[in-house]
Length: 238
Length: 305
Ligand SMILES: Nc1ncnc2c1ncn2[C@@H]1O[C@H](COP(=O)(O)OP(=O)(O)O)[C@@H](O)[C@H]1O
Ligand SMILES: [Mg+2]
Image (tube, rainbow over all chains, first blue to last red; front, side, top):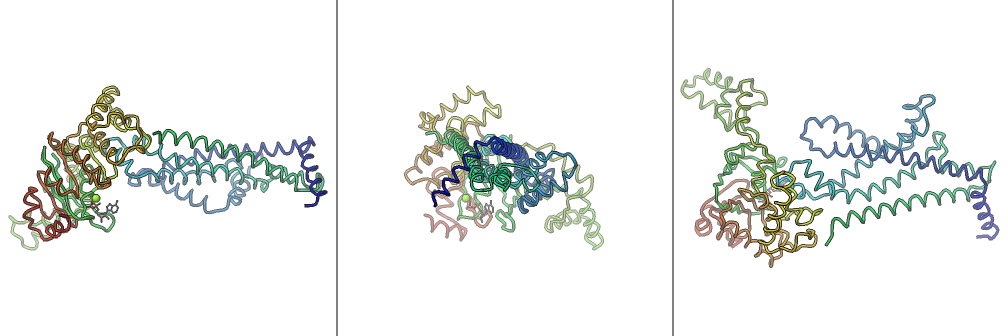
């Protein structure tokens, strides 16, 4: 690479961090990204857990037939259609109410989307536990709930945690499409900073935004590893 | 002690048990033998209802564990609308008065004519039998210890918790009592220092002995063994069989699915040969192993002995 170009890049890179207006925009964008991500992750985990519970309840329970059907439709539709389309629908149809905060629209859209994936992850994790484990519990006279909560779920969680971590990481990165409904997140902020009226180059601001995403993802990955290690320790102690 | 009455079980289209009836008396040691896929495990798992059955009933100590099977109760069939209809038809066809009842019941049973709704009287009769005899399966299972081919120790608990979790949770004993009993059992099976070990650190033979001890924690009246040594390395088979034999000698009632013919011959008081979802022959071990009658039993024995 040309030395002058490189110098230009570093100059602009430094500028993003030193110019208060840019820095402010960047952190405002970061804040938006984090608010949407955290809110959506919370909704996703809650909703996903509920849906997973409904889905793993034995089918022969008649009271569960309708909830089960609803949950099946939910996960199928959400996972079968693009996130951008769901966000668009939320913003311009379902929550097309004047004065309804954009953040909430985005949190709901991403939360509802994430819930479907979380539900599938939890369900798969629980189902991956050997059937013999729950059979042994039932054979001792424990009821279904006791067996599930004390024997199956603790073992299933070991498989679920990494999958959930991946889901949250994917969610954070996916929030970058909110500019579509006029919100300024980290990605949108980088775009504005790089536009003609400002820096007039996208390279430095996008690099900075990328760095921010990387840091968040790295921290998350680290936290998940810690949890995983802790779970494994309580499981395989010799 | 355990009575199995005309039990049918199928997995989808695959009929696995085709009308099994069986009685296990107190103190009996029953060995179930037969080729792979003949339904031995399924039958054993029907005894404690790990498998749901299609027709038939399972009773434990005079208590009904399954839903009422109307076909097994003539007085219930008689209260159904279908019975009245069939009787009328038979009368019209000129059947003698004295034979109508019997013929109607036979026809209904044979052609599986009962519908889900058969009138109020019928429903009341079914309900009455159920109410008078039903025992919740979770309570029944406490009296029936089960030992699996794959041990199925709880992987997320150490040995002590594997043993005490159920009896403490179900309030059968206090934690202190359970721990004391567990320690005594561990000592008995020769593993007194394994209380803190996790299943992943144990050998197959150790796991299976602990699985047996875990069942014994509940003070079961009967033990069900599903090929307890089939997943073990050969050098560990002996220690597990020795423990089972010890229990048998102490008078424990047991049903054992096994491919260890020598063991069946030595320990069992009665041997049942299953093939294709039916019990084809049963009798004392001496008789089964030295004078088999059924061709398929002869064939089976010639392969395994
Ligand atoms: N959970 C199941 N789902 C479907 N088919 C099964 C299941 N368990 C057993 N079977 C079938 O039932 C038949 C009898 O199986 P099993 O009772 O395990 O035989 P055995 O213990 O005598 O070898 C086999 O054909 C097997 O494939
Ligand atoms: Mg088997």
